[in-house]
Length: 330
Length: 265
Image: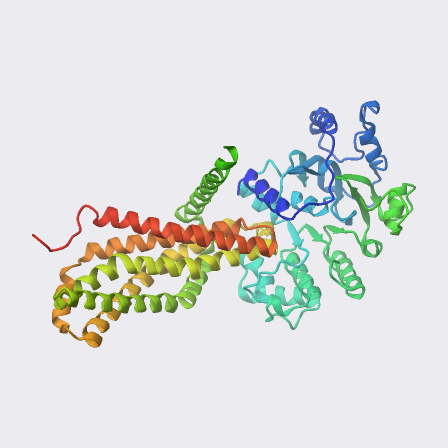
């Protein structure tokens, strides 16, 4: 589908979902970022800091809104390079600005977590990574290649690098579990049924669903659907695996088990794993790298240990889950 | 004035979107890209056969009975009961079967497509397909259109046959005012192979429109389950209107200037 069609379609979905808490940003801010965009596009390397607002007097309201966004980014010692980069990405749905000059790098070979309050654009981030949405401004790079600039065929090819676990697993309701997991193999490889059977059985066992292959998705619990979605996401040995709120709707024990599973599988397979969540316990369990997203920009990002000891009041409040602090109900 | 024009403008915009979507699906089918997923097209063909054949044939049979009965009584009332076959031939082939096919396709297949694809949309299954590197438009929409092209002509011809058979039963066996030979003499005199072809074209035009409208509304559904319900209702309205438009235009084009009736030389 063409880029505009896809964006319009999402706009429609977004508007249909009713009002959200996302706030509308000043036009001044948009202009300011337009001024910066050209120079930023000239150097699409790893992003280390967001550009500081250059004219504080003209943007007092904005400064106030983004005063906790230090955009500090610390690289971990073990990180190789960035698998995915967001460069000054802006995305607006109707009158709601969801991503507002987002700069973010997802390090290769680590489990990264994008944390943030509800409605800050975390899922929109994932959709930008795989080209389900395109930025209004800025760029998204996957292994150095610009996603918005890709033609449809290249985009479909690039997506084979990804495995995505959607919130509810997004299993195909017309297929049983086995066929769901085998589906990518049947579509994208020339493997015979015996080999497919061996891979699917192994993946299903890894996620603890060894005996459930003949069950239909509607016969599974929420946790089982997520695990099945995980098995399907892994079946092509993707280089980048995205998890959209894997803990939503799960009880604490199953959340912990799923986190352990993510860690185990990552240790075994490697690659860049990106987990979107607002659950701090999950972050403590699995995150090696954390980026905190709020109001469409990164507040701070870096190795998990550093973020948990950050001096930034917003980061401290969010990661400790306290009621008092810069983040309110608005 | 602006408000008054807003609704028609939206309709025109929707029709434009549907036309664009349909062109894309046609391109996927006739550009042969759909054959990458020929297995899925075969599966959809199977679903059509198993899920809709008996319903459509049953409706065709009942309407064939109705045509036969009404034709027999009407011809009796004008003192020409032997000509009951005229009514059956025209009613069954030219009008009732295409409409019956269109209605049942709209109600059974069209709404089913919206509900199925719409549900896939709101549960992220379409996004899941896309991120697997599979064109959802080809996999979901083009395969269904190809399946319709593979199955529906045969299903339609058999439905016409069911209607003819039912009319025969009603006129000859039930009412019994004309012999079997007498019925068939008139029945076949008032139709020929081009009529069957024209009728098939009407039916297939309706079926194609219904599949395209169904896949469009399903593919673009949004706003959760309520949105899917709304899309289903909209598709039904558009399909019923479209079925009548195609029926009317088809009759006008194929038989308007030449009724192809052996009357008066």
